[in-house]
Amino acid sequence: MTDKIKILAQRASFSNDVEIAILSGKAHCTQLVMQETEHGQMTEPTARLSNAAAQELMDQLWSAGLRPSEGSGSAGAMRATERHLEDMRRLVFDTGEITHSGTRKEI
Image (cartoon, rainbow, N blue to C red):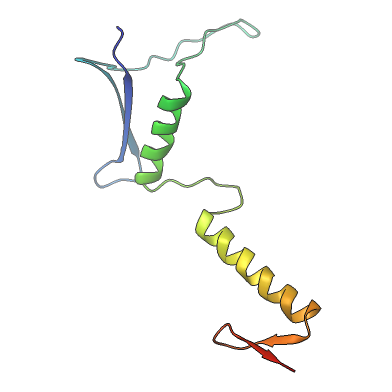
């Protein structure tokens, strides 16, 4: 199979589950089977994805509403924090004051 692997994710209807489909050309993955292994036994990975396919999976999960449980938050929240920090630095270190409109007023 030389076709690009495509991974789709979506919220399942009427539940909190996430449905994942793995496709390649006209083929699709039908199921994953759990097998018991001896303690310490070497195993092959369940799947290996290219960086592009992994990024696509991440984007699909994001579109399905999943977010990292830990981390620094979204880029928008980070930018808002950076702007707030810039304002605080101006208030502390500059001789001017920041007004509600974001303009500077000399003291």
